Length: 385
Image 1 (cartoon, helix red, strand yellow):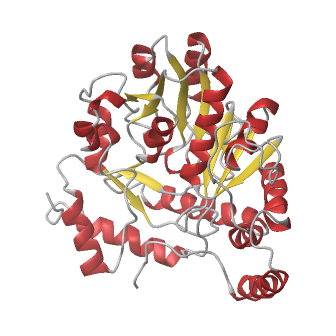
Image 2 (cartoon, helix red, strand yellow):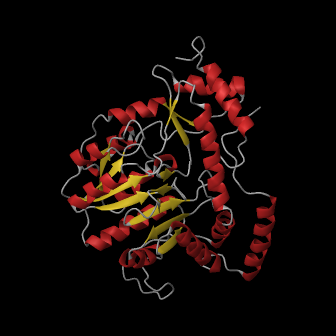
Image 3 (cartoon, helix red, strand yellow):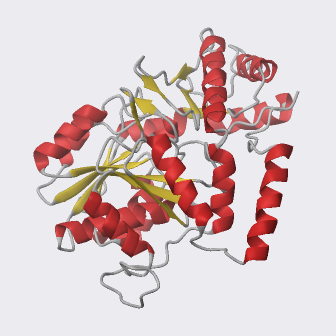
């Protein structure tokens, strides 16, 4: 049996509904900022539990809008933002785009999320925000401690929830733990619109700023009056239409991912890999099913063998190169609030983590194949290393 990396959860029923709606949309000629985008925002805010939701062109632009709104909120340029090194570079580049410098923080070796101890040691008086990244769709078990560190420093807590649609932490949805959160709807994400993003917040002022920033700084779109800085971060009606199809089955998608994760939890108990297990009061979205390889096992030869000999394709890591090791900083060191230094936990996890295939419709039979392939490839006489 071949087990693919992922399957995007659109079916024939979705395709027929989307096709009919798209035909009407094209004939009406309303392709931007219409009723589909507005309806998607309303449904998503209710799903997340925030007061507001604001659609954007992609997940990175959602983060950029938040940081531009934060810059407007504090009234001055400059300052630093604390970001975990175990994330995609967009988490760093978005605050840089709004004029902030970056502090890179190590991760916890057990849950892969931002390490509060390292954050407390590195946060600075000029740190305006701490960006909590819900890596793999697992809300950080330490988020209350991280928020307390931010609060004590006078910093706001923001969330990069690109992986965490519907994830729960202590009864609260990801995206509602801080001042604002950003979601991505890229094709690989838990909920997808092909391209698209969403800002969520319950803060009136930040929402009003974000509305204008999304539309070239116009507080009233179409007025030709630009009251603040802004760019074109608008979503399209076509992508919002896909979002409406996704929201109609969001609960099923989350249930399927959690069902598959529970099967992996069971199947990996006797294998020499260590999965990331959330606390009882957390429900990840399981964008990724993350695990740690035994010491001494080289990941790339293992992945090659699993694919070629057993037909099992592992998903991409989160991430194989942490942000503090990216070559970009060699060219632009002035964008860092602190010099690059070793982050041992992030470097270890970058080398030893794997992500097992997980998606709606993944069968127990396929998961048994994944587990058996791992068992054979990591056997005492066969494990690559």
